[in-house]
Length: 447
Image 1: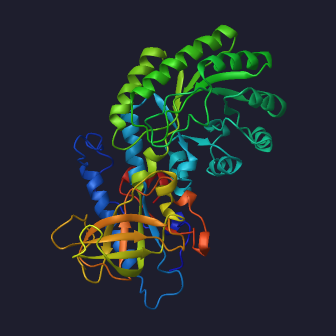
Image 2: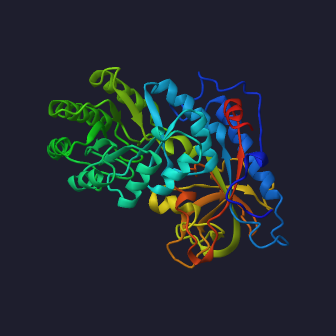
Image 3: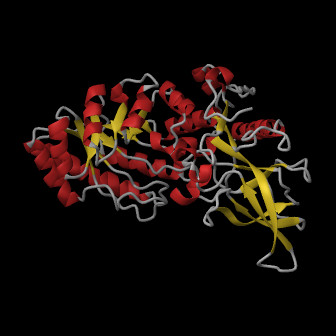
């Protein structure tokens, strides 16, 4: 089968296990990393689809590219995350961060769920509008915008946008004076995985000056935004940011602006969501009355766990084990690497973990690996000629992995496919097989 970027809805590989919709009492990863019954069933389903697709490929006789890496995307997992959000942050309206994963089926589901979109460019605005949503459900959350993109946003009716500097206000005055502006303020994101405050955000003393300038220019400031950093690790950052936003709200009203919306940005992660959302929810209730609209820009929260990647072992090389020269070790080369779907290693500081999907030596593999006395040490490399193209410097896998075998990697939905390149001539256009492990998502997407 020739690889494709995505599968049309009519061709979607659809599965509907008898889950009777999402189990609201057990959706969530609880303390200790336990998974809900529905999520465990979904993981088994994903694994079955991965194995079935990989088994269809005869690497010794297939056409060029038929053994390329591919994804299985479970829209049911996206749906479960949405239900989880509604239970914990019901007051906060999600505007999905398109940059995280602009997959068309993800965007389509976000639209059906009633979410908005956080866009940072003309192309992302186009992707959002192609879902059929109203432009009012898009925020142009880029504090430093291209002039022509500003004019385009005006043409298509995307009014909501952020700013954090005086030059941006003059630019907006000239090209889109009727826009609805959110002042992005500086936050402490020193404990976040990807810090954003080094690039965006106005300090509190500058914020007051910007509010005054916006008023002088007769521009409409309607809200405040902040972002505690992608992959935030300190929930107290949300509390401090909400407190600072309250101060800016008061200053804006004093100057003469009528603010009605707070954008709390992103930074939400799978493992810490309940802890973060609890602190954020309490802070919002303390500092902002119910008449203030609250939105957020979650990205990885929705999609990180929904995509699983399978890659083929295209070569193997013997090498001494650096920790124990008496043991054999191997270098494995995959047909995907850091210039492709593993770009999250470089750009998002992730550490994807290989598991054996299909192996001639271990035909029963396809379950989570664990180090045993029979484990063999490997380093795993991408296909390019660049020495930095390394996926794992060292990992123990159960048994011998051969050329032609398949490995798979979970949690590959955030900042992976979207930042892949064609460096060295390798494909950035990999097949996605869509499934749904939740009847709720199936109904919304007509699977």
